Amino acid sequence: MSKNQRNIGQKLKSYKRTPFSFLMMLLVMLSAVITFAVLIFLIAYVLINGVPYLKPSLFSFTYTSENASLMPALINTIIMTLLSLVIAVPFGIFSAIFLVEYAKRGNKFVEVIRLTTETLQGIPSIVYGLFGMLFFVSTYGWGFSILAGAFTLSIMVLPLIMRSTEEALKAVPDSYREGSFGLGAGKLRTVFRIVLPSAIPGILAGVILAVGRIVGETAALIYTAGTVADIPNSVLDSGRTLAVHMYNLASEGLYMDQAYATAVILLVLVVGINTLSGFLAKKLTKA
Image 1 (spheres, rainbow, N blue to C red):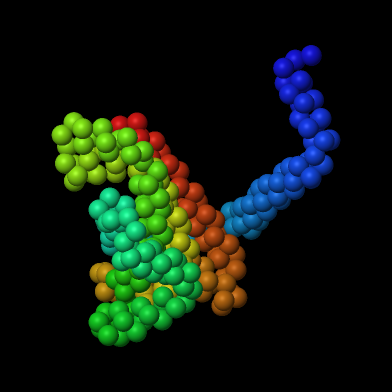
Image 2: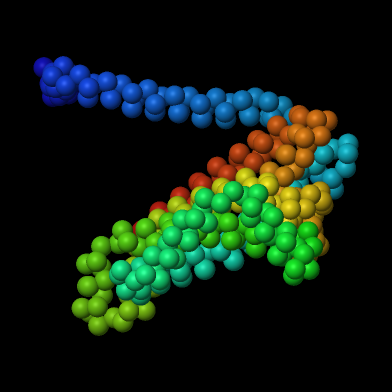
């Protein structure tokens, strides 16, 4: 009898002694199978309904009622994502560094910041959209623009980046810090040369989640960036992202085929960003 067969036999005996454990194992396996099956079904459904309608006219740089091009929305999505990350990532990372590395443990102010961050994570996106419309669009006078949408989204994803960075920094062993201090490095040098590079995989995980939320957001952008289906000449011009483009096509009911095709491009974009981020995380970790 092989070693694997003996291990399986021992597990079966242990499950017979504890039927509840066997039942929990079945429930866990069933949950995993159902989750995987639902994911595969969604991906297959989108691909089957969208791939046949990926035509060259969909990638025209000018949107018309005949082609319902998604290219302007794709370009707007990339611009919106990059601009939002440029605003949110530095604030999120530096805030997390302050909370973990510089703030005293047990500080009441730190607890208030963490409570506020967790509260902001639970606010619906429509509330962010209304805030962005009242503050950036109306009060600041930016109008419906890419800039107003980017600032609104940066506020929305800031708690996510901040909390993920904070957890990544906490996961770095204290021995790294102690070794750096023992070699004569200062606090700032230790943070940016030792701690922060070690936490990059966790930070990138938070950034990936933020990108997914930015790319898939609609409610907040309808009230801030608008729904103009053109490539903006500047960040103060209005423009729709892929998610908003898909929503508008589906709500009109006249371009359902193009909406499914847009969903395929959106799916490919998210998978591509996740793959690229994972590749960069591995490269930076090895370096």
